[in-house]
Amino acid sequence: MAAQHEGMAPPRAGGWRAAFSSLDHQQFRWLYGSNLAFFFAMNGQFVVRSILAHDLTGNATSLGLVNLMVALPMLIISPFGGVVADRFERRKLIMIGQATLLVNELIIFTLLVTGLLEFWHLLVVVFILGCTFPFVMPARQSIVANIVGREGLPNAMALQMGGMNAARVAAPVTAGLIVAFAGIRWMYLIATVLYCVALFSMTRVHKSPPPPRDETVSPLGELAVGFRYVAKTPPVRALMLLSIVPIMFAMPFQTLLVVFAEDVWKVGEDGFGVLQAFAGIGGILGSIFVAWHGGERHHLRMMVASLFAFAGTLFLFALSPWFLLALPLVLLTDVCASVFNTVNSTAVNMIIPDAVRGRVMSLMMMSFGLTPLGTMPVSAAADAWGAPAAVAGSAVAMAIISVLMLVAFRSLRDVERATAASHDGLSPFAAGAK
Image: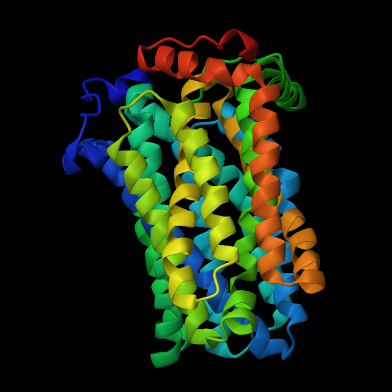
C-alpha cells in the first residue's frame, strides 16, 4: 500500500498550486474524477426521484418514504460496511458498489421508457442505494489514505469535501433544468453515463489491498475491535463526539431554509433557491480554505475556531431581519461548517491506523445519520416559537455544549500531538487497533 504514494511531494505551503497539490498525483486524479461523476449523478438523481415519486403518487408522503428507505439501511448497515472495507480489496469494493447503482439506474430507465414504472420500483431502488452506500463510502474514504499517504491527507480530504459540496450545489440545479427542458428520461440517461464514467475512472486506480489482519477473528469480532478502538483512543473518541454536536444542533437549520425564505423574508421559491446556492457555495469555499492551509498542523485550533464561528454566524443568520443580509451570513455559516467537518474528519483519518480505518469511517458515517434526529426537535421548536428563535437557540446550545465538551475532554489536547506525529510518519494510537 505504501508504494502507491511513494514519491509524492508533501503539500506545499501557500498558493493556488498548494491548494490543489493532491491532484499532482495521477492516481488521486482518477479517484477524484470518479468521485465527482458519482456524486453529481447521485445528487441529481435524488431530485429526479422526488419528482418521479410525486408524479406517480400525487402526495407528499411518498417523498418521506423515499428518504426513509434510503436512511434506514444506511444507519443500520454502516458499521458492517466498515468491516467489509477493512477485509476486502477497496478498489474492487467501490467498483462493485458503483456497478450495482449503475444497474439500478438502467432498470429504472428501462421501466420509465416502457411505461411500466410504478412507485414500489422506486422504493426498491432507493433501498438498494441505502444498502450499497455504507459499503462504498468507508472504502472510498480509506483508499484516499492509501493513495496520498498521511502527509497528503489534509489536502486530499479538503478536495474530496469540496467536490461533494460542489455536487450538492450544482447537481440538483442541473438535474432540474434537464428535466424541465428535456424530460426525466434524458436525466436518467445522463446519470447512467455519469455512473459509467465513475466506474471507468475507478478501473484506472491501482488496487488497494486491505491491511493485514487476524484471520481467526470473525466479522462480528472485527466490528467489536473497531468499537473498542474508538472507546480506548481518547482523541479519536473526543473528536467523534465533538463532531456530533453541530450535526444535532446546527446542521438541521438547512432543512428550515425553506421556512425562512417563505415565512420570514417572504421571498418564495426563488429566494429559497438563492439561499441554497449561497449555502452550497459557502461549503465549497470552506473546503478550498482547508485545502489551501492543508499543510498546517494546528488542526485543533482551526477546528475550535470554525466551530464557534459556525455558532456565531448561524445565530446572526437566524435573527437577520433582511434577506439580503442573510445571504452573506448563510454563506459564512456554511464556510465555517465545512471547515469544521473537513478538519475534524481529517484529524481522525490522520490519527487512526490503516488496520481500522474502514470501521472508524463507517462509525463516523453513522453519526451523519443523526441529522434527522436533530431536525425533529428544531422543527418542533420552529412550529412553536418560529424558525428564527429555534435556530438561534440551537446555535446558542451548540456553543454552550461545545465549551463544556472542550473543558471535559482533556484528550482533545492530544489531537495536535497525534496529528503532528502522523505528519512525521508515526501512528501514536495504533496499538488500540489490535
